[in-house]
Length: 195
Image (cartoon, rainbow, N blue to C red):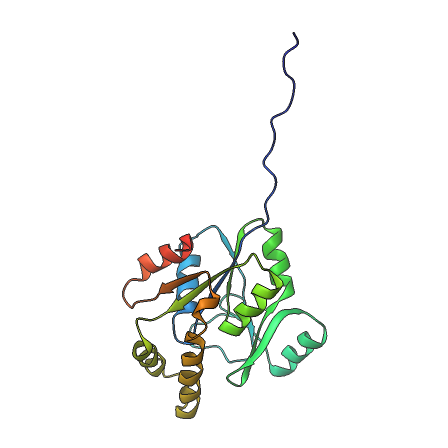
């Protein structure tokens, strides 16, 4: 009897997992994604485009792509954004080129989005995994927003009111991770595992 010359079955190539890190303003989305990136976790981190000015130590193309409103409007006109929103007097959006590069990398993809952006991505990619970051309670979230000192009083009031509404949408997400201060390492591990 001749030896079996069949080649072993290769597992089918799977699509990268699309992971969205979301939650209200001030909950620590940027910090979690930065920590994940610093730890060299095997993800492709999509960089969001925004019209807000860079904060101290933020780098164009690393933390965000910083554009003028005219440049952002041109991106909208040219259909270069997967999703975008006008939030707190500035635009934010995900460049399609970032998503194409991310999916082509074969790595699982991480996006940092606000709550409405997360809902848009879920509509476009139903298999996306949505992770909602939250704080211990609303008072803690309000405290963090105040301590950032990045908004004028009237802007801060709007962010707090919006955050309260966004907290009500937690049921739209696959996982909820409480982002407590002082537990960055463990929190990053939990987000990386999706638990």
